[in-house]
Image 1 (spheres, rainbow, N blue to C red):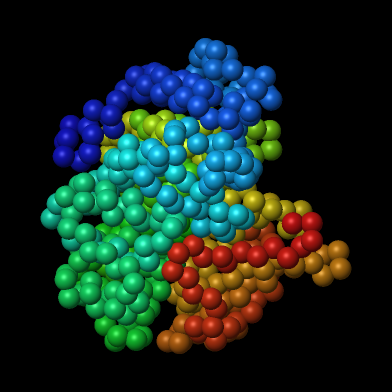
Image 2: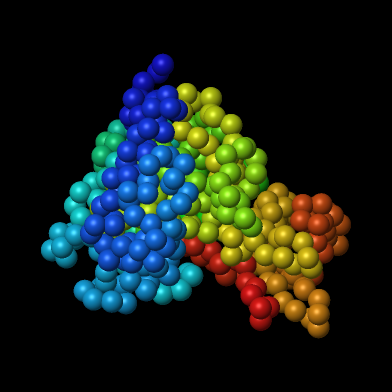
Length: 442
C-alpha cells in the first residue's frame, strides 16, 4: 500500500466491518450529545417517541427522526439569539460564524467552536490530499470571503496540508487571473460555473490562453458540474488541468471528495460522516448500487450545532469501490440533482442535470444556459435558453438538428429552444440558478 496517497492511511483503508463499528460508536455519541444538550433535538425526538436508548444496533439508525433546513430555521427563531435552541454549547464557546447561501429560503446560521473549526479543516485535508494537493502547491482561492462558508474551509485545510495559499478576495476576475499568472499558481478552488467563466474572461478580455497558465489541479464544489462528464471535460480542456469534484454543505461540513483515480464519483469521508441513501418515494434504505436515492447525512464530530440525519435533498446512487484502495464508498456520478429539482414534466420525471450534460457536450454552445418550466393551458412547457459561441461554424438550424434528438433521448421530453446573444444569459461566481419552475403548483 502506498501510504503517500492518503491523508490518513489507517482510516481511509479501514476494513468495512471496522469502519461500520466506528460509525455506530460515533453516531451513538453524537445522538446522545444532541439529545442531552439541544432543545431542538430533544423536542424532535420526544415528539416522535424516540430516545437514545432505542438505538441498539446499526439498523436502528433508520428509526432516528430526520431534520432539514426548516428544523434549524424554526429553532433559530427562538432564544438565545441568533442560534436559538439548536445550540449545544454555551454561546461564549462559539468562535466561528457562517451561514447558508439562502438560495432555498431564510439563511441558516452555523455556529462552530474552535474544536469544530479544527474538525472542518481536518475533513477538508482529506479532500485536498486525496486530490493531489501537496506542500509544493501554490493555491489561489478566487472568491469573496463572506459570511457563507464557501472555501474558508479549503483555505485553512490547504495551509494544514502545507500548501502556500493566495487569497483572491476583493480582486475582480481579471485581477485574479493576472495574479494567478504572476505568482504561477498551481491549484485553485471554485464553482464549475466560475471555472468556465474565468477561462472565458481570460481568453476574451485578457487575450490570454488559460491552458498556458500553471494551474494543474482545480477543486470544484457548489454545483454538480464537476461530476457531469461533459462539464468536467470542458473545464479540463479549458485549463489543461485536472478537475476534481467535492460535495459539502454549511450545516454538514465537507463530507465527500473525488480522488486522483477519478472513479466517476465521489468518496464519502466515512470516518467522519454517515451517508444514507433513501428511496425517494418510499423512504426505504438503499444499499444496492446504481439505484438513485435521497442523501441523508450525519456529521459525527461537530458539537456546537450537530447535524444528525439531515435530509440534504440531494440525489445520488452507490457505485463500485474505487481502485485507489480506499474502503470509503463511492457515490456514482456525484450529486446528480436535488429532490426539489427532480419534478414531473408532462408526466415524466425530469432532472435538470441531464440537460447540462447535453448542452455542455455540444462544442458549438456556450457554457451558460437556462431552463424555465411553465404552463400553457394544461400543458407543461420547457424553455431551454442557450448561447452560440461566437466562433461556432454551425448555423442555428444545424445546432437544433443535433440538440433536439439528444435532449429527447436523454430526457424523453420536448423543449422550446431559444437562442440568446452570447454573453446575455446570467453569469455566476458562486452557485448558479439555471432552473426555474413557474408552475403555480410547484
